[in-house]
Length: 107
Length: 368
Image (cartoon, rainbow over all chains, first blue to last red; front, side, top):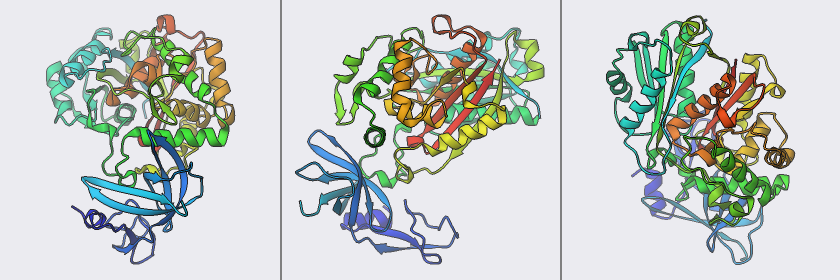
């Protein structure tokens, strides 16, 4: 397992960034695609906003942009229909593959 | 630089059942070589295989089976657009003089590893294409007021057109109502909005324009090529756009010295219904807000200009073979050999093949 996956298993979403130019790199890589220097990690704020969403069965899912400017796909917990731009809180886990889940704030 | 032409084509029927990759490959390659006048295996000095299958050394295996000892042989993998990328590689080998005649064969089994890109961690556990397909569809509805009926027309049209394609996995007609009432996959996708992963194989034989005349009465020239990769990960995309298609089309039009209005027939990559609407807009054939109306008009007037063989939705999607089958359809259209699917007075045709939610696109322009 990678460091990123280990951290997801601990419930932490690590943001990969360049130590030289501070560029955020997603999906994570060992080198920065702008200046080719080594990258490092910092914890996400786990706060984001809904870019787009749909529903499968009884579960909403969608594309969320988290504060660090990166986008991920995951399940969205919301009783009313979610709204574009709505603030969400992210929680993460790892079970053979990454799982990203979002709860609409002030739900 | 030599100009390059297509002189032979061969296909197998597509099937939703798993198939033997090597057997399918040999069948389409054999059909292709037999379609060419007086072609001897010694004439072929390049063999490329496009596939997402994990089988090893297929280029060499296909060569040995066909009795070919090529100068150049290897596999090409680029997810759903492996086929057109293999043809583009063959074009480069011939035009540079590294090779004189190249057999390009694409193949896939229905259960293939090319449907999911595990590398893309941004998809989380929602890695199946239906999730990005739903995002593109919802976003298109939101931004361009695209209706569910307009989306269903894409599928109904392509299923109807596939009825006249003997190589399609299914020849069942589907009405707009059947599409709209088919099994719901997500709130924004019905099962009949989705292309189906299939097994199947298709092959083309390419050579220089000068040499082509000795092997074919109707060689079809590849006059424009554009390829663009904007990223590998889905979440880099702007949901309402396929930027890679727009850029690749611009390159292909410039190379062919044509404009979008010159396109008489096009095979476009309708992985999902919305992808056809997005593709014809990015290719400049219509605009995003008019794309639904454009396809409705094609359907109502039985105009087969877009996806005459039924597209991926109607014909099936054997990933590594898809781009080659698209190319065969446009070749046949330009040769006047498309039987019931034939469009009148075709001079210029286009192939649009893309991968991984449109993160890369390959475009070819063919002319007779």
